Structure formats: C-alpha cells, structure tokens
Length: 124
Length: 185
Image 1 (cartoon, rainbow over the protein chains, first blue to last red):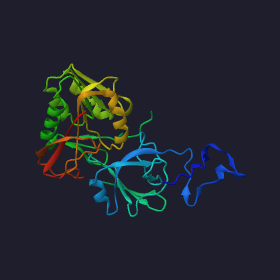
Image 2 (image 1 turned 60 degrees about the vertical axis):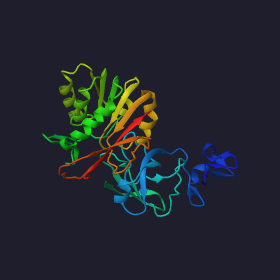
Image 3 (image 1 turned 180 degrees about the vertical axis):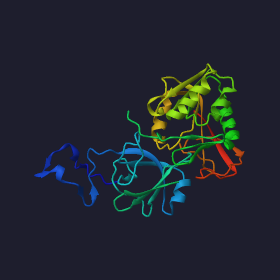
Image 4 (image 1 turned 45 degrees about the horizontal axis):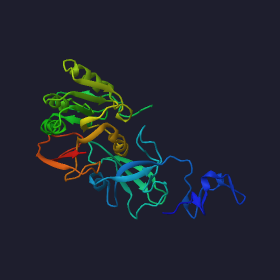
C-alpha cells in the first residue's frame, strides 16, 4: 500500500519543509492524497460492486472513514477507505458500502471511486 | 461526550416502537426471538449486561431467569423513562442512562446482550468489551443475517428459529428464519 506520509525514512507529516517545499502545500504525490493529522477511524462496513441491496446484507469487515463515528455516522462529503492510512485505493468497482452488519438498521453509502468521497446516503 | 445519536421522538404503541421517521425500532412479533436471547444470555447466571432496552421484551424474559444482577444501558430519554418505570419492582436491575461507548460500568459480566438502534460502532464495541467479560462469558445480539454469521465476526454457535414477522412500514426483517448467535468468550 503506498504511503506518502513516510518517504525514505522521513516522516513527512512531522516536517515543515523538505527540499525547500513547504509540506503544508503538498496535498498529494502522484495522485495519492496526503493524510497528515486527519481523522482516520475504523468502521465495520460491507462493500458491494453491485448495489446497496447487496451491501446491506453482506458480511462486514473493517474499513476506515475520515469521521469520528463515536459522535455521529459518516455522511455525504466524508470518505471511505480500505486502509488505516486513509489513502484512497478501493477495490475496483466497489462503490456501495453498508453499515447494517446484521443489525436492526443501517446506512448504505455510495462513493465516488476516484476520490472515495461519499456522494449519497440511503437507508438499508 | 456530546452525542447526537438517536435523539428524535419515539412513538410507543402496543405492538411496536417507532422512531422519529416512523421506522419500526422493535415489534412484539420478536417476542419468541427475545425469549431465546434471554435464555442464552443468562445461561451462566450471574451478572447480565443488556445494551438497548427497546420495548423491554428481552429484559422481561431475562428477569424470568435466575441471575444476580441485570444492568441495562439505554441512551434514549423516552425509552429510559420506560425502563425506570419497568424497573421499579425489580431490585436486581441497574438502569444506566447513556451511550454504551462510555457508560458500561467497571465490571465483568457473565452474559452480554447487544441490541441497539442505528448502530455503527461495532469496531469500538469489539475493542471495549474484553474489559467487561471473563472467560466463559456469553455474548448474543440481534442478528438480521440470513446465514450463520454476525456483524461482529465472532465465532458463534447459531440457534435457528422459525419466525413470523408482522407487516412493517419500513421493512427491517421479513424472513422466516432467525439466526441467533451465541458466542462464548
């Protein structure tokens, strides 16, 4: 899994300036987003490349979101990732994610696969 | 902690509990399911933790078993009031108002029943619960999966029940089988 936060042993997120470039001005390298200091929390979700209906009945595994789910669930504008670094690299075609996980209710998130951003929210 | 979960107004009907959107939170057809959950979670006797009171169906069945204490955590104001009313003549019930995430008493339980509404913090639950169980503790939870699996991915034994759900406005369960998970830690 690519990790732009550490390059050649240098923890990028701990630096302010590298080779004359202000780190705060770097948002991504080769299209991979930098995630320094952002929230990246684990959440149980089930993914599907078919439909929300399929995701809502599928078995959940651990994904990650840029949201503190202790307080409220993710919504439109948040992002879903499949790695603890919160780097956008979802499996091809998987755009539906459900939080139902066999519980009484759940939400189905549809994401933009290019950015991992949640673009719509529906009930399961 | 500031929590803005599940704070809408609920409607209490004879045979169901509705949330602010009119969605069924719990219904009386679930009684046979809850009876079995209660039987499973109390198999060790001792101290029982129930997370989510709902209509109190499971709680009432739990009370029919020989247990030492029955801690019930409920976040919703109206439901908690119902819980307090229900618990008045039940001296071993310990009602706790709050979010389970930061409200589980500092204690190890013999059985844990988990059944909440609009939950999305299974990962946090799995990290938290080892502090509140002991070897041999039993865990069970509401489970809508139609096969032998559970949202927590715990290894479990499944008790398959025949069920007859009544009509729902916002369908949450319309199957004829219920896969009740029993996890022994």
